[in-house]
Length: 447
Image (cartoon, rainbow, N blue to C red; front, side, top):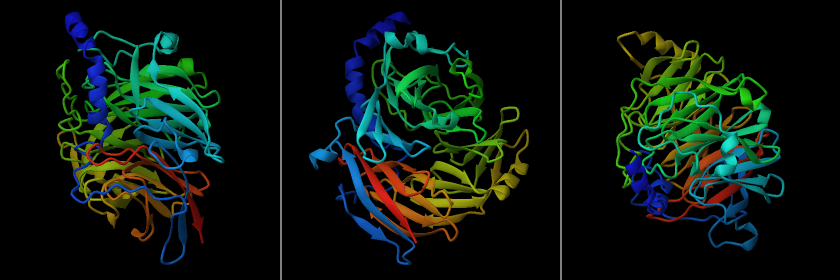
């Protein structure tokens, strides 16, 4: 095993450069929509769009980009931005630059950069690691806590005091098959104050409604991490369960060359949402036949998968008694009453781990629907449409799209300020087409 590790170390530099192409782009599973008509666009500040009924108006008021443009908006740290998270108090926002291995903090009023948080984990971070949980074993490499992490999504805990950022993989693990990690950032100091291991290839992360638990979906092996964060003291946080969706995917990939880890990764677990009563965790499956995996949190039991929605479920949101999801491949948003969805769980049994539910309302949006978020009152759904390079708006009651505005190609991440007055998107780009490396900020006017 050690000889393999030493051999692989000689390929680290190669792997880092290679991975910028293979990991930066939208994954094959995610980008199954037609691409022959894709065009790169960079909308100008001042671009506006108003719905026909006059109820809502969007204006692109600012941007941060790592390509040409104006000097005052240029920001070199924006490199393949994967996600964006607005602090609950609205004072600042955090951008995860996947390939830049940084989280950049911006002031929400001025859009000036406050801090750049590096995810190059070195000896100086050794004291920040939590005690091993025993759930995640290194089977291909000797354990190595010195690496560069690729920040993916994020979630706030403790009323915004901490921001949790999982790493897509550790830099030396070129095929994302050993444990990765999650960094916890203190939003007061904008510094990493704790590191914890995760399973292989983590992507989505979510906080329970009561704030006591954090869940992390592992795209790489059909598992989900559940972490107890009920204490105010970070030293008390600990992994409590490793939740398995149907089966643990065996991982045995080469150590000296990269393979496509974004296809053939089991159920390819992605979006997650806790039910509002905290009883269930729903996990979107972008692969393996699709659907939504259901976990009973009372005892950490995997109940089964609910099928019947469109394939390629990407993002989940539960709000005001309704479940919303984005369908990446076909560019739709779907909505269902949560109580009706839960009723379908009665079809699960010890022998039958599947249920059907088809009572959906559908809204067609732009191709490649990725991240979705709702306005604070739940009246509007904002959608980052990757292939279409637009920010779409859907009226949640009628489930009709009535507004689109151009976004830097190709948008993937999205968040809405707590007061609903601003919407933020990140454009990650695609190697074959360009685009990306931008954050767009839109002002929202409601009538």
